Amino acid sequence: MKFLKLSMATLVAASCFVSTAQAHNGEFCVLAKSALHKNHNLQSIRHQLEASGERIIQSENVNGPKLDLLANLSAYSARQGSTTIDTNATLALSYSQTLYDSGLSDARVGQANSNKQLLNLDLTSSSRDTIVEVARGYVNFIKNIQLLSLSRKNLGNINEQLRNIEDKFAASEATQQELSLVKSRVRQAMSDMLRAKAQVLIARVKLLTLTNKKPVGNDSGFMKSLLTNIPRSRSAAIDMARANSIEIDKTGIAIDAAQFEIQAQEAGLGPNVQLSASFGVGKIAANTGAAGRVGLALTLPLYSSGVLESKVREAKAMLAAARARRAYMTELSKQNVSSAYEIARSIKQSLAILPQAIREEEAAISSLEQSLARSFISTADVLLAKNSLFELRKSLVNLRFERYFGNLELLNSVGQLQSVASLHTVGLCK
Image (cartoon, rainbow, N blue to C red; front, top):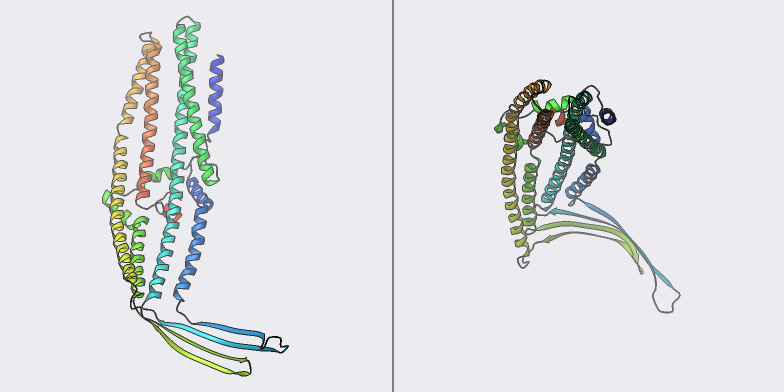
């Protein structure tokens, strides 16, 4: 009986570990928002976006007018040993502006805008990765809660079996071997329950570290949406992925950037025209007065040992590489979505089989218990059947959550987990 009390005390402690609050919607959304707020990488990318905006301003105005104030004051001795100090002083305004640069500034503006677009996609990509990590962790947390509940129930059943066999042993209706066998099974069930409890704790700590919030695991709306808000067909999933893929969008921007680089390098082969002007007043030695100057400067590369031409060819090769990368990412996205869709569908089909096996096992155990009551079979046979049932139920929980994970990966592959707004669109946040 001491052994039984210890088992029940452990069971009660495990029961207290997991909250039994009523299921509701919204916990996952709170966790996702908290993780996004905590993610310092997102803040880093936002600062990079601010810097990229400044680079766009610089590129747009690189050929704009420039006005400088030039001032000079100097004092010197005209002859060695002389005590007479002469002074020079000038004050001037200088103006300059590029009138024509063969399209170089336009190319640099295009590249600066492309860089900002890539950073925006990096921001979206980092947000998506954070949301997916929270979602995976949350699904795993709920799975472990259900496995712990199943282990607690199994321990309770085995404890009931122990009480029955102890009563029979006291009445000389069971052997010491049967009693020892049931006690051994209780220890095994307790070990299973403690392992399940540890897995819940680990999953909770991972979410707590990621979000700074302690999860409960009661968001039934999130779990339901994982089963209902998926593409209706593989072709629809592929189309969604093509429209939403961050990786494909990045390759498109990379192609634009490569084209701008070609334009920039070709501009290096063309003429450049600059306007400059200055006006100043001053005193130099005994001369005082004012002076001004206006001029145009033309620069046209005639020969560069093939360096400039080579840069153009390099830029064109990078464009070809960017286009090939886009084709590769498009095909890879199609393969990933197709695979995720088929996995999700196959798991759904498998789920229709296992529950029937569990019902058959339950019926078999009921029959075995009746036979045990009539002493037709041994306790070991019943324990073996109950253990088989427990393993089947664990397999069912694991398979159900494989479906949740599969659907989660499918939603991710079609671009439905990129932001809090997208979570609301697919119903994962309400």
